[in-house]
Image 1 (tube, rainbow, N blue to C red):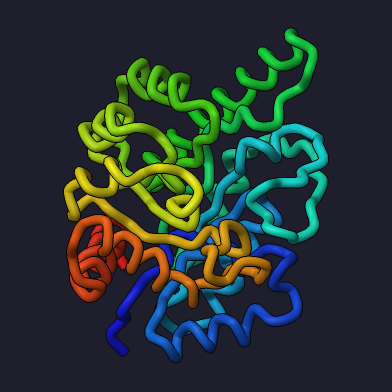
Image 2 (cartoon, rainbow, N blue to C red):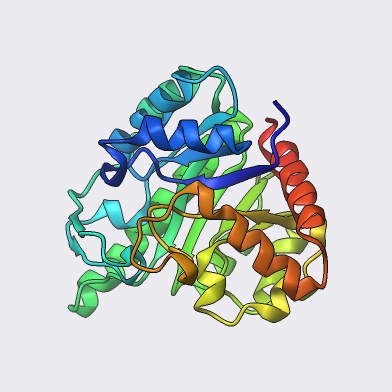
Length: 279
């Protein structure tokens, strides 16, 4: 089967899909939509790998520790669009454990999602600074892991672009490759990441945030499409749980902004995903 689309950032490994992940995956494959299910902590990373192993092709995994899972907090996120929240447990990044998980299957194609997230920070100023430093330390460790494994990274950044840019500028060693997932920055920030060789990922946030300039100016060869499901449901499906089947709405919105055809955006972004993740 030749894939029409690849959702480069899905979360069918999360609890929102506990009851029907197989049905959803089968529906996506029937529509010629492949996917990378992305881990957010060790437990969900293992689930992502298990899902990838369960299918002979077109379902892959990324493994990593999301910055919000470094602390303990109640998450009731605007991205959830009516889904229930969750409580993080404060995982400590264990490089050896993630290294072994990455080696457990050739279908682990990336380290992610990793990054910086300043949306949920402690109120106390000292604790806030401490948590930011913990996030930076974890990110640097996971970037090193990706280079050790020669895998691309999937970077999450929310309310933290200046610090992410500063961290990447100071980090001289290595040869990073990857994607800035759910990009929400401006064109100047986009240009920085593009010059570093990163791709930019676009999902349902393009219906909530003005990213028109970035989408219109980015070289097509550096664009990826994603859903971040079950989060960021496109407005046309408001109130429903998001799935990779909704990737078509992201592609169409992107095509409209670039005055391109749906097929052109679909073909190029699918080729980009295959190129970056060696699919």
